Length: 335
Ligand code: TRP
Image (tube, rainbow, N blue to C red):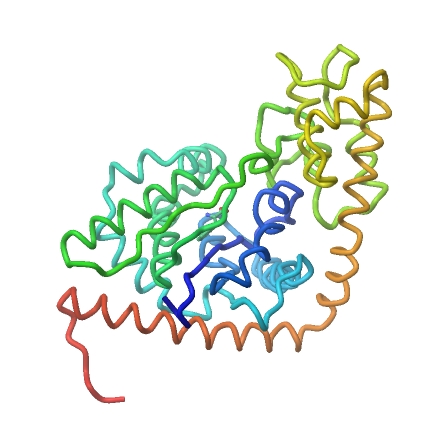
């Protein structure tokens, strides 16, 4: 669509320090699209305020999330990297799409139910309408493909429904996007409760491996990972912990499950956990080094933000003028 390329869009919230789940399930794959697609990757700080944030922390994490995008291999010359609040069209379209999103649809969102249970004292309207802002992020750029973790599948379905509904009423306005959800590593589970998703806001630090954790911390967390009372490194019933470690190991080394089972045949859980820890720490080391270098250079990060905001705003403006015209909003000719 833009520059004759199809568009990829994804977003990461600048809340909490990102985990290897965010890395393997989403960010690591982002750079694979840069040649073929026009890629926009956004730091979604407006989504982050649906739960209470400390302003200084939020500001710091905004820089850090951008630095992390780049440390994970996203070149700002080849991708549009930007911050959501720098492009006001997101909230403008968000409001409009609120009016084409049904109360019943939003009520069914599992992320809303989970987050309201966790933040019982702050179940605000933004938390409820979060998915229509996410739809706005995506539809604003005529996005074809949205790489996300499997937990965002429901929000993507809703985005498609909103786009289709709007197109039905007003004629073709939005591209109806597809999700891109990697099959094998889309869901990394908690190391303490391997039937639960690894979450960056987990209060138990041992459950979560973060992209910026030191090698010592990574090895220690894998050593403590909850497994089962057996001793074989294999897939099977009741072996959620081992299977989670296998998928993490596979994601970092490129090995298949069969290869991993063969490699650790006859070895114990201790050896395996150590190998997973080493593989993870080694794979993250270059990302961490690059992150540290970039995060120290605020002026450079701000120049990337500015360039990204300019590019994104230009593209967003095209969709917005189409939307306003279709809705019957009066547009003034003056510049
Ligand atoms: N909701 C996503 C998450 O919590 C973040 C997000 C916001 C997003 N807007 C998006 C992801 C648009 C993809 C596309 O992870």
